[in-house]
Amino acid sequence: MKLLVYGAGVTGSHFAARLHEAGHDTTLLARGERLAALRRHGVQLAEADSPSVRRVPVPVVAHPADGYDLIAVCVRAHHLDAVLPSLAGVDGDVLFLLNWAAGAQPLGAVIGPERVLLGFPSIAGTMDGDVVRHRAPTLMTRLAPMPIGEPDGRTTARLRRIVGALRAAGINARAEPRMESWLRTHAAFEVPLGQAVHAAGGPAALADDPQAVRDMVRRMRCHLAALPTPPVPRAFGALRTLPEGLLVTVLRRFLRSSTAAQSALGSTSPATAAELDRLAEQLRADAPVR
Image (cartoon, rainbow, N blue to C red; front, side, top):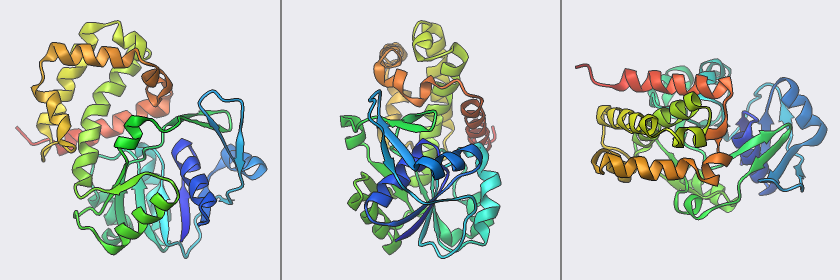
């Protein structure tokens, strides 16, 4: 399979390296200083705090060419408007692996609806200079594989082919028939969580403020109640039914954990805030008029 991975952050770099090592004809698209670093050293991967850095010589380009079987777009939600026009004239199905709560329609309106697949990356980590520091697979990531789906929910031949190729490359992917609802549900949870962490100055600081966590839970419930479809996975429905005090206790414990500290929740970058703002806009646009 000939692939282009559009976006060379944590997700795109790790994704491209895995596919390249599995024998696929993989190219990584990057810009500016990141492009220069990749041309010098390839994709550099390290596990958590390990001093050992592995280099994977993935070919890199600054602009998409043509003739791809699949283009995997791994950028932040607020960057996607600038990316879409460059994909309109390039052949290949397009898998959007990112935070996105607006559904497939605005994507298909630019590149063609028949080309769109939706997904969400299960790869987690941080950038340490030019090195991608990723976490080793945990029980949670094994139980929650990378969901990928057709916007209309069908299990098509191309979806089976893509999921099969990713699994053969060691990426724990699965077909998700309700991918749009899955992404909206994730945003309904992530936006209040991310914004509360950002306002507090980090996950541990948020955990020390029970009232802020309580307010966050209430915002999650509001977003979930406004979804046009039931939550996916259904377990997220528990956020609307479990006692508020229990949820506050559980979430405070999570916010103090090493998992929260090492995740993207610890990021205070303007890009993180901008992405959360874009997702919040999408959720508001999707909410029913009262």
